[in-house]
Image (cartoon, rainbow, N blue to C red):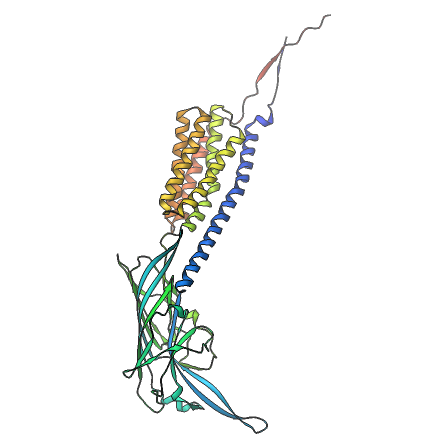
Length: 448
């Protein structure tokens, strides 16, 4: 009889091989995770398309420009052949003062599972134009009888009431203008000779505009001094554009005001024909923000899939090492697919209800499924309980990160640092190298 040491073990049964297998499975599970993220993007795009259809039937986001006074005039010139030509032009004049007060009445409009934010508005516009005696210095013959006042709008379908300008206690109804300004559509009111070139008086105006729109409303500060006030019953307004307002938020709504001077924006006091660029880069206003964008939160949660899969697999791996229970790679794969399915559940349920409730349902269902499956593998209540506690902490941790947008990176980094420390501590207790087993080999003695 002879005793020999049989060194080594099968590589396929080693911890190293199992670790490599787990890493490969994690990388493979990134494929369905990418598909989930594409699905979220696709659903978000479909939502945007549906909301656009709703808005088009009501009215698109509105931007108000004006009013602007336009006066036609002609100039005469002689060409090289000594022929006289008359050329028509338009002089566009901005107000000296412009005051706008807007009252918004937001409402939500549903189409299936999709929701759009619409509004009605009551807009009071007033102001004055400076005396026009300086027109004498401009070369040309002005046709004051054809002068008109115009106001530009993004979507004329939103006008719900006949718009009239009041000048010198007279009313001047508007009609759809010629749209000579490429950056907007407009309503124009013929002034029928009320404008005088030799007068030193200012021309005050006012009008009431009832306007429907969607999502946001903006204004262009064409006045030398422009003051705008917007108020409405919406708890989560956002302020957009080139200028920041003074604002006040209450439980019922908001109030915001802007005061803009002529040197705050690049808009001339007057210009000829269509010689200026559009003024959209100077616009400002309010956007009615959706307080919870569940597609954005779904996308943010899906970015943490790798962390969830890796940490859950780490728990299974440590249990396998500490208890000497073999867990098949297929079982790892099934647990990984359950973790990925969480994001599909979250997306589909959040489209039907609020995100917090959807997260609760999807998380509880996923944790229950993985815990029940783990119990069938471990056959041990304490080990299953540890896994249940870890998964619960992970999903609570993720929800907290999703809610704390401003400090999400800080909280996430601290949390991951703590988790890594725990894993390092546990791994330090494990004997990664097994002692080589002694195997007794009995050999028959050969007859001499």
